Length: 180
Image (spheres, one colour):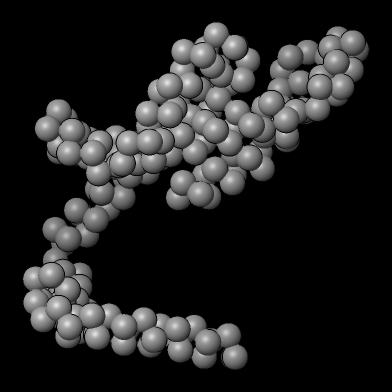
């Protein structure tokens, strides 16, 4: 029960901060009051077009998230297993990480049809995080365990499922959690 009241207190605190900022700014266009936002949400929730738009956007973001995860894992495997691939692709990772997402959004709005912008945006947020974490997981795999597996002629599929995946899983989950 104590935690419930702590959460309520924090919620009330931030709502009061919001009210103070809205009052200080004095423009509903820039910072609306919480009551205006709440009433607008109620109004929107009554429209089927709102729900269709929200669900469509959610699916587009999820598509970008899944594609970004897949591309990130692929790039991690390539760069962890090939020094040459790492040399060629490392600048791409640096570019994606260094460029603000807002810049990509502006270019995407110009280059792509509107529905693809959330897909690309979420991909660009996810790729570098998954790539860097999964690569680190692959490179941290116990070399002695791999040597032993090869020495006993363990099939590559078993090495993947029994050594690499369990080693990389925490890195991947951390990346997905961070990207989310």
